[in-house]
Length: 98
Image (cartoon, rainbow, N blue to C red):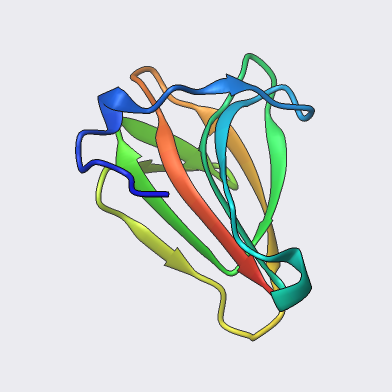
């Protein structure tokens, strides 16, 4: 899958956790998963090693993070993060590996 640098071209669909997202086709057998995610009306929990705010600002674990902010888990185990939308359009990239 090739993703354009224009994130406005992403077609987000409803996901089971209440967010809108695009799952990237990585191998679960390889132990990696990733997706582009925009939070829904309710906060959700993400389990990830890396989060990158791509557009707008997102509230991650109670802290408002602007676009181009990278969050990296300090250990090799994925961390748990609460995600909520801020006042503007939040889009982030989430990646986890085990």
